[in-house]
Picture 1 (cartoon, rainbow, N blue to C red):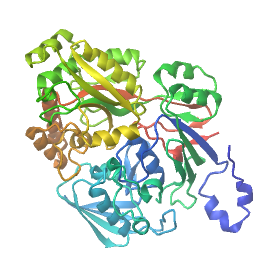
Picture 2: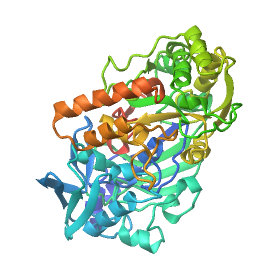
Picture 3: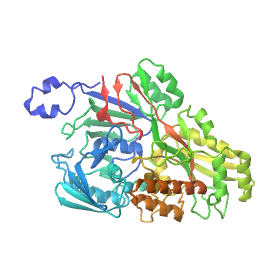
Picture 4: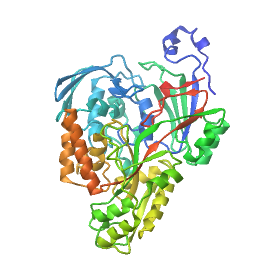
Length: 529
C-alpha cells in the first residue's frame, strides 16, 4: 500500500500549501466491481459507473452533500433573476488539471457541448435555451420555461476546459453508439479532487489526488485503483484475501458470509434504481421474432400477459436473496413522486396471461429475442433466464441474447432490439428524470425527450403531462400531474418493471465510507485506518 511521507514534504517550503490539501497518512483505495466505465467523455454516456468515475475528475456548478442537499461546486452562489433566468457566480482561482484557469467560457462551452447530439447527457441541460457569459466569473442560464429541479439537474452537467477540448479536437461529444474513438473518451482534464492517471478498458483505472483542488478532502485516499471483475466469485475472493479494500456490488448469495467474516463489514443501503424490461412498441413488424407482418408488442394485451406472468417475488427470493423490492412502478421509493399504492404489481396469473395472448391472436404464443446485459446489474443474466422460463409457461419463447454492457448499450441505443433489460437510477431524485428519458416520446432531433425510450412508447396524454411537470413550480399541482401520468403508464403497460435494487457495499473494517442511494462511491469522503 502506497504511503506518502508528508513529514519530509513539509520541510520543503514550496510544497507546504500543496501538502495541506491531502490528509496525513494518505492511502491507496483498491476497489472492485463487475463492470467498467464506458468512456471518460463527460457528455457521452448516461451510465452510472461511468458517471461515478467522471465525477471524481470533472465537476459541475452544483453538487450533492452526503444527505443529497444541493450545494455549490464550481458555482459559489446563484439567484433566480426571473422564473426563466438564473445567475450563477463562479468560483475564482480554480484550475483544470493541466493548469488552465476555469472561467465562464468553459461553462458556456460545456453546456453547449452537452446540449447537442451525439451527447448522451442532454438531460443535464434540457430546458436551458441559452447560456450567457456576463463576465469571466458570472453566467446566466436562460430557460425555455420555469424549472423546479434545475439545481439538481445540472449536477450532471460537468465542465470541461474549452481550450483543452479544442486543442485535442474534442469539441463535440464522443458518439458512443457509433463506437467513435476520441481523445476526450480516453483522457480527462477536469477540476475535480482526482486526476486520471491511467485507464485500460476492462483492466484497470488509476486516479491520483489533485493536490491543487480548490476544496479539501474529508478522507485520506490519495490514490484509487479500480479493477473491473465480472466474476462474482473472483470479486468476493479478492475482498476475502485482502487484495481489494471494497466491492460495491457484492453478490446477494455471499452477503451473509461477508457479514460473518471478522475482518469485513457490510454497509447496507437501498438504491434508487429500478430494473425493468422495455419493449418495441413502434415497428409494424417485430424484429427477431417468429411473428411476420405484425408486432405483437404493440398490443396492450400481449404486454399485460408478459407482465402478469413474471413472478418478481420468486426472483427476489431465489436470485436476489431478499435484496430487492418487487416493483410495479418505474421509480424507486427514494424518488419524489413514488407512492406505495402505485408500486403494487399485478398478481401473477399464468392462466389469465394465456387468455390475453389468445384474445390478441396468439393462442400458441410466439418466439422473440430477449436482449440482456451480463455484467451490469445484480444477477442480470440470471434474472433474464428466469423471466424467459416464466414466459415459456404462457407460450412466449424468449431466446436470451446476453452480452457485456459495453457491447450491449450501443446496440439498444440504436433501437436494435425487441425486448431488452435496463436499470434506471434517478440522479435528481425526482420523477421527471425518469419520465422525460423513458416515457416521453422520442425527440427526433436527439434531445433529452425519450433519450432512453428505446421501445419508442408514445402517448400524447403522457407527453402533455410530462411537459407540464417540467415547468410546474406549485408542488401540489405538480405531484397531482405525476400521479396522473403514472396512472396512464400503468394502464398502457408501457414497461415491465421488475424490482428496485437494494445495494449493500462490502469492505474491510478499516474502511469508512458513505453509502449513496445513487450507487456512486466518493473517494473524497473515504477514510482508511
